[in-house]
Every structure is written in C-alpha cells, then in structure tokens.
Length: 243
Image (cartoon, rainbow, N blue to C red; front, top):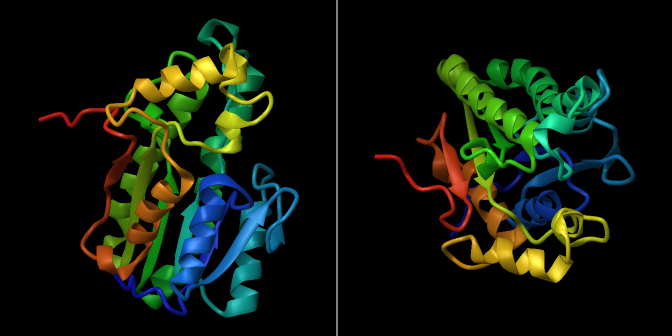
C-alpha cells in the first residue's frame, strides 16, 4: 500500500534506535523527508528534556525544509522501581522525559501546521498508560497524561486541519528491554524475565520495533485521514477493549 507520504517533511524525536529508528527508516522508504534526533546522533543532536531544545529542533526543520508536515513524539524511557521509592526528583525527571518533550515539540510545531491548514502528530505512549505497571509507576502516569494531551490537541485543532493520535505499544524488543542493564535485567534473570513478559501477551511474545513503526507510519499518512483523537493499541492484545 502506498501511504502517500512522498515528499512529506517529518520529524521523529528519539529516533536513533528502537521504535524511533524503525519509524524513520519506514517513512523514508515511503518517500518522506525525515529528520531524526537523539542525544548522541541523528540529523539534529538534541537533549529534548532541556527547555528550549524541542523548539530549536523544530526551528531547524523549518529552516531546512520550509515546513513540518508530520511530528512523531517518540522520546521516552523508564527504569524498574517501586512507587514508595520514588522521590520528587524522580517524578520531575520522568515528567520532563516522557511528557514535556512531546508537549514542547507539539507547541512549537502547531503554529506552522495551523497556518498551512494541515498537519499530523503521533505521540508514542504505552500500554502502561491504559493499564498502569506496578514496576513503572512514574512512567505509567506520564504516558497516561500523554493520552490526555493527544486527545486535547486533537479536539482543539481538528478545525485547523491538524490530526493528533497516540500509539500504545506493549513491551518491545529494543535495547530498552534487551540491552545490558535494561528493563529485563533489572528484574532478574534476563532470559527468564523476557520469557515471562512475552508469555503475558495473548500473542505470546514481545513486539518487534518494525511492528510498532508500521502503526505509527499509518497514522502519519493521509491513509488515516479520518482518524484523530485515537489511542491505538499495539500491544499483542495485552489490554482488552472495554465495551
């Protein structure tokens, strides 16, 4: 299927590995012009947790390409920890990483999108936003807030031609889970943890980054032109639909 993304200008944050990198590669394969970002690489280096950096990155995209058609807010991360162990600084750091990066980038991108009467925003949330994880409490709360923010943007700017959706992946086979010191190792024997986490999905395994990227790319594209304000589960059936 042609996603009709040829020559669209896209910015994917947190895109030097994992889901973000797969999204960049897929969008480029569809003919889009894609700007990637990361703290240590990408087309534009930036630490988006720092105030002013998301705005700077958006300005660089506009300076280089004259417009920004698609914004994918993918920055995020967490560690395994318990609610009773969290202190204010932990909550603040998670807030800056998992929520404010998306809010600041979105606020920077919206004026140009509204002026052109078109724009697409996709926020990468988490299945933990719908069913909080006891071992990722701050992450769960911030990703739930991202769903609310996504819906707010969708409601406010639909009249201006701007669509905003969220994706809620489950555990995905990226370095965050698989890497040394990653989420699996933080919970015990790496292979045993990964097997247990995979078995906890109805599909019986972790997602591959490309599987999440495919959902993101669809929501970025004109093929999803009647979809806004949605939170698309890509979690192997983990969180059931409430009817």
